[in-house]
View (cartoon, rainbow, N blue to C red):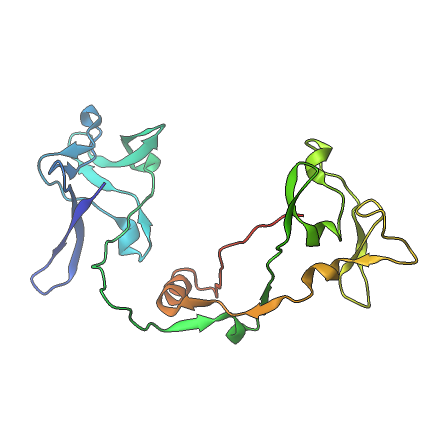
Length: 228
């Protein structure tokens, strides 16, 4: 759903902190009112987006209700949007469509290495059907216990609860692999042999915006999940 955004300003260019959001398909405006549960109107009403005023990516959508002499807002009610008093208004997020760029451009980035964050990745290939589950043979050679065949409760104690001082990784117990014994233990470090050190950059302006918003250093990555 697309909305045309209008910001009201004074003659000197300073913002009035009143806005309009007009639906590009119907032409109606967001106009929450407690009266009759109104959420849209064919006429502009002047809404408040306090989140925008406070430099946030989300905001309640409020409008003054003359009949009830209080602010009305919008809230999510099940699978639809409904009007509500200000105290029950929901925060909404909006995305801004930027014009497409026909050519690649250079942007300033930050790197995980700049902040002492070391990252390594490894691709577990050699996939095979083992116990009716597709698994990597490389992983299965280290941990043979297959929690998928153990029902809803995962099998505990497949790794020792301490780190091997020689490798820095836990050792596999006999539960995890019957070939792992006290005399010839199997180390989990075998799964990370040959891992490549990688660098992942983040667009600096997004990092800086998050830091301004929270006052904290944030360096997030999309989590990558895997299993044995």
